[in-house]
Image 1 (tube, rainbow, N blue to C red):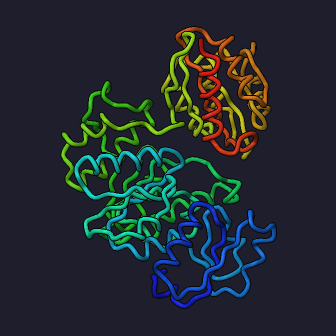
Image 2 (cartoon, rainbow, N blue to C red):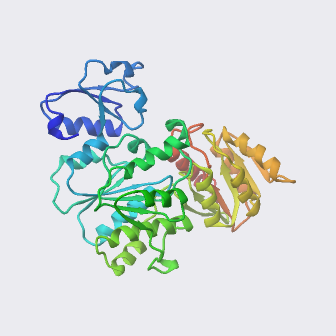
Length: 409
């Protein structure tokens, strides 16, 4: 929605978290004729009933569109409608933050005027409060929540991968995939769609759209020892980033230098340290079985793994098979999915690994110190969302790291 379409309107900002606050600041500064009110669950239990009498609602991504009873738009749509610069949009079930950050880092290393915004925690509208140069580029991480009702496609779209996620929000796998596909529903012939060719669904989408289509490049022009990211999934993220920045004529020399100096993001196969001979990794953002499988494959020598969290209907049979294949000897199980994983372990193992069922991260870390063999890995990678016990994955990962260091010798 263009700024002139917001003029003189009575606007309700529905949801007042980080993005809602950015929307309020933006509208106050850029649309001074608008009358703005705020409704949020922390301000009123019946905040959803306050939508009457407004010309327009600006909905926060975490609120389902079915709960909006008035005409509405989103901060994402306002951003896309009012930015004429090139936007690189990155989405995917996992890897989107790393890929977006890596694209940003390469372009910045090359001296390009570039901004990293979106689901990574930097509201898009905040960037529109200051002057923007005509050559500025926006690297925008986009979640399925933001894409569920988007009306625009970026100049360059990247989809890292696709597997079941956020089904409680979307109501099922079909609606989740539909939300993801929305990012390419408005492409123009000169736009680009960059996709992971290993994924059949993405390959099928690539055949259906009218724009420039590019699979991830196959080669990484950096030696393995200079890559700061672990695992085959991260090699795919690097390939995605290289494919994007080549469109900006960035040389392989600059790309290589940028990859070498890239700092991995916290809570994503994050090396915590080696204590008492045990190697600790924090992969708190691995909130699906597929993500945890990739972590196990990347590290290989996992002696102890922490699993379990909120139940979103995931199946754990493939994860348990990987646990058996990699001979993981110690398992911590957190509720609620810990019980489902336990049942699957009993089906797959004649003799179960050593198991601790707990709700306490401190107890889990003590167990790891007692049971993990020296020179093997203790991995926090729960294969489930964090909300059964923790506020978010950051809280879970930070607790893990703090207790690891507390009980180190």
